[in-house]
Length: 39
Image 1 (cartoon, rainbow, N blue to C red):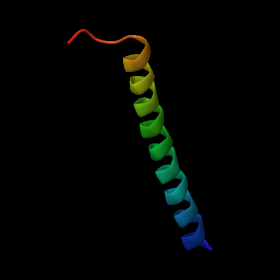
Image 2 (cartoon, helix red, strand yellow; image 1 turned 90 degrees about the horizontal axis):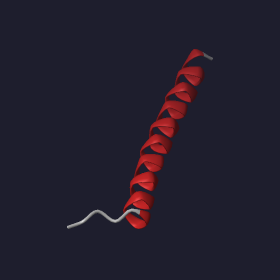
Image 3 (cartoon, one colour; image 1 turned 135 degrees about the vertical axis):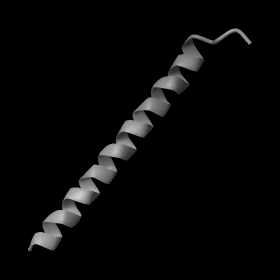
């Protein structure tokens, strides 16, 4: 029982980290599209 709970918690943390990284990537991608930085 405890092992299943720990695994679920790890999976949730993994999904949360992925969504944070994905949102950061998406924000930077949209920023570079709408506000192009001078090169």
